[in-house]
Image (tube, rainbow, N blue to C red; front, side, top):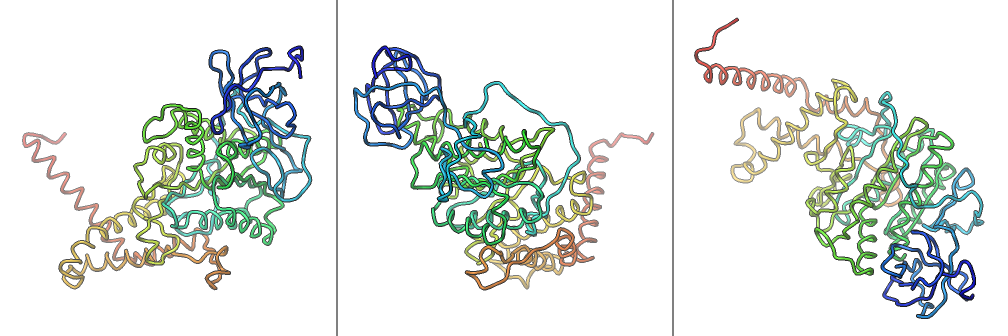
Length: 469
């Protein structure tokens, strides 16, 4: 490679971890372009940004064969992944290389980087509820086509197992395609999911992308955009409805932060990369619906040190329509899924979406669970027998609800020996009604009536000179 080569860029000037500084002598490459190294055909650098007369690049595979002074050339290509029907049933890494010992797909590839300036909006469509067969999700965080739901919790509380159960249940009913994105998770879990999908004949309609915990931060940071690229193709070109599963979206932020540290960038709030939150929003924007198709996403979110106020966790939550919170104290009681019924929230829980009956039941359950939390402190002091009959009834109903929302999973049947359970939405609503009973329903109505009367009296006291019109 000589200076006269039209693709010649320059030479490696500095190396630091994943960061490679290339002195630009001749042709200036594009941002996100892959650069080749003379004498190393299987090693590529990706241009991240420019500084003075240098291109700051990322050593994607963290190769140790690089050294200062090596010649660098343009490839005029970017990181790309295969898309289309040939990818169904296959497993790839973030660079589009097969991980399932299958043939490499060299044609029908698309760049992973997001197209600049292209935005798509979808018209208001009729809401379509997708049944998951999981009581707590169908009841508290309705699974709506084209929306985003998050499963949030610390280490070891069951995020991955719950995600696998969702994949198992939802994909068997759905007519669309599924895309699974594994970011920074255990290799064993990825293999178990692959085998489960294969045994249940779901794999044939699924595309899987992995950047697991043994991969470099560069690979882990790109597996999310790689999976999004595949989803966009099926949505825009084939008009498909996509189920998009991510485990774990927080690991995407961690990978971006590791890269930022390698580049020597000053961290922002909480020690995270200064541009990580904008990158997260850019990724989430890609998982949207258009007039041609939809992307419905389920995202597992790891919570560092069980701190829900972590800046990264808060930033992810802002992008979601529903958040299912898993609690360690509930998991320690042997309840699965270990869902905190009070902290779990959904902006989709409205009468217009789920119906008045469902909405009223959720309101009653939340009121009882709120009372349950306050009564636990009183019971710890005076005992349950000292409660009024009404309070004792509400307390018992709350305990029944906690037990009712626990459920055996099909994906863990081989470990627990208990067959997996699937409940329709109607079965779930009927089960809640049976627990609440007429007494609880009438109590809720009387409580609302008392609050209305009290509000009226307060209003009259505040305006003693008022008159009727």
